[in-house]
Image (cartoon, rainbow, N blue to C red; front, side, top):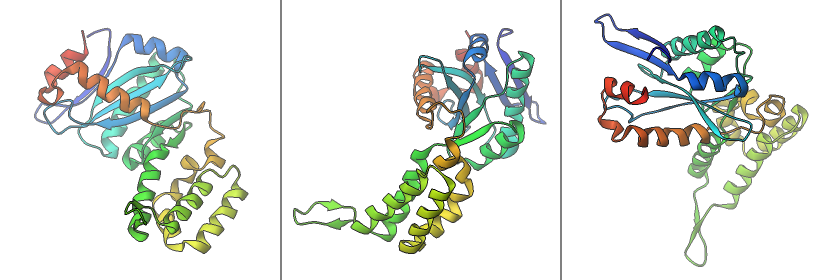
Length: 253
């Protein structure tokens, strides 16, 4: 236990509130691999309905490297800020520079905490989540249609709307984005209004014209960390039955 970097907080009643665990091997690997981090929460690692924040990176061989796990009290900004403050302390103590890029889904509380603690780190949104969200929205406006062979397909309007959205997202320059934005506004103003409210406020984390300036080395998804979720759950064995003590002792040999 002493070899692990650990930080924790307790409640007023003396119960464990939050805990961050980072293995010594992970700290050594951070010295050579820390450029792009991916962070994501998962559940069902313990029997209580508590999120676990998983932090991973990748090495020069594109292999996934597990960095740390944190039991978080809830998915809110204060909880994330405390955990990320501990993580930042770990980096400082071991003289490791902060990451260049952090990848997350659109978890606003986590995004705000990252901005607060890692002020010079760029942020990238996982595009799969934005694609799924936009796809779900425009399917409500342009329902699927049945064709001659009785199969159901997306409508022409839905396909065109999503294609224009992708053009906006993949714009390589800000002027190119402005042009694509204007076309989308002209043809699908309702979709554009939805994007303005939900995704364009984070254009610097989503649109290629901005994200291509970041040193993310082609890492633009949270698939690594999501793969780690399942590996850790398999390692824990019947993870949803674990209490906090068994969760920690199983992770620390």
